[in-house]
Image (cartoon, rainbow, N blue to C red; front, side, top):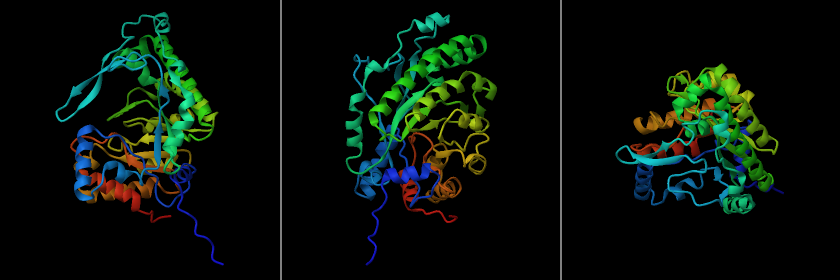
Length: 361
């Protein structure tokens, strides 16, 4: 009697196999956010060429869905977040970006000033809705659910100012530590409550801190190790204690910090800005591929906006061949998809990710 053919694996199964360093039927695919002009152009292109929306096109391809705890606190003023940081839209021509125009702790002179601030608490969220949110996200199939989005160094400088925070690390480290400690207190408690409510149905927690720029790290490895790394280690432990993995996003040339990122407990390194100084996919996989998974790596600086479709296709293939060897790779753009990106390049990227099978298995 012939064996019954097994149904295709679920989105969640595909993602978890990759995270366990096992190759799958295809590389798992992640969707990045669109800058509005890029989204408008992509939607028009898909409607014209394939008679479908972005949602219809990406739905069968993307293996991950995002979850945010439900905010139930006081109504926030327009542009304000729970940390008291205010942003306004700044135009760059075709579109706009949110830019911070108020750093609420810019004038803090002491740790007491930091501690006296009205910090957000988990009382602002209703975690009892998490199971219903997961059920809704999985209503048309089982996905790899990712809780969003904890930052620590960035939380600090959003409240203090970027330049002032870097100065604090040298001149007033106790102020920087107080900021980072309060941010960590919130995120560790927040993710603990989300994961407890999820009862094992959230697989990943997205964390981030940009610690690199185009030319390298924003601070020395010893400075980062002393002032930032321990706080992320504490947040990551809270996540791991409840059975989830951590994705960590950073832009920039961060190769010198990767070993330290592993030591602080990340499971997946995200962005993979290979246009930045020192970033090399072969070196990254060779040195760290047995300890770390990777996500991203398709450049939104050069490959997607400036290449031909065939060059885009070849870049995707190269990433899958190198970073996907033995599993451990989630393919996608390194960051938000930018205005001016040719829609045909986006289709080429997603089509290649969905159909290409590694040759060197």
